[in-house]
Length: 144
Image (cartoon, rainbow, N blue to C red; front, side):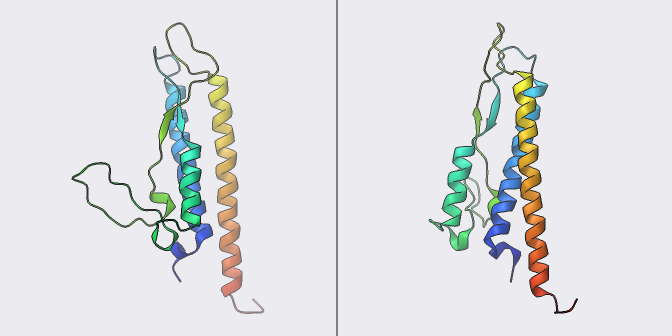
């Protein structure tokens, strides 16, 4: 049986991919903390959660996998390997205050989001590791 056919691994891979993308977006926000007119951004959790929910319930997807999105008419449609290949929606998410130069990045809030994202990623990676351990245990010979 392929690992791509086990839903828990597909969901965890997709979650870790989304959290990795979120870390990149948050790092960009921190890097632009002094850029005039820069608006803080974030990964849209709601659209990602909806995508995962649809995947888990098999709505319009083949065998519980996410379909790749074609954003340009010239792109070739392909098969996705699972949730990890999904494209994540980046939205403007200004922090609690905006400076006079129009920058909406508050470093303290961004650092808190980075820490929260890291904790969520570590939890997902831990679940992935535990699931792999259970799978290994299930396929091992008794007495080993």
